[in-house]
Length: 210
Image 1 (spheres, rainbow, N blue to C red):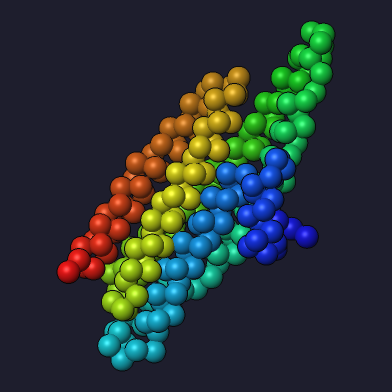
Image 2: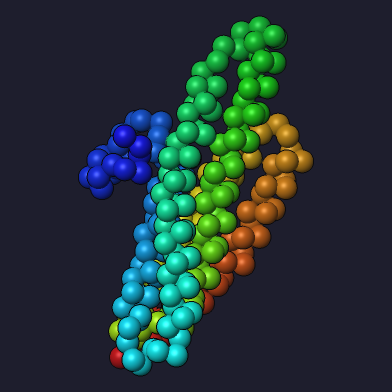
């Protein structure tokens, strides 16, 4: 059974164990899927309402994008685990001789880059989800605006969480040019879309104040 197909109790149980996977990357992908689904729910509660007939075509399109994103997030849970397992094994390779050290370093470098790719992809998916939640918060049913706020802040949490899985791999890499490039790209996403998520959340919160 794939990790993403586990029941919620089973996923949480294995996440709490000493098993190598799932870890922070897979958990971030799950949180991203939940955040996206919350935005999608706002869309579901908007479609078919006369009050929102003018934006219904846009909402339907956003919902289709959410359906796709949710599936991609769930697939990334399994992809993250698939990419991390070789790295966890590489850490245990012998390094007693110069030849062994060189071989381990070579294998480690490839595994670090592979393990970095999926959390970075999760980050990019989170930016898409944050933009969609922004639209649901602006155009969706006001009766469900709180869910758009929860969705966007979940997506921000997933963005930040996935970034740490990027940074832990770039920190260990000996290829500093690659690591610096990845760090810069990840930080740019955090700066731009973290700020957007905060803005959307603040706007939602302001609507709910008495």
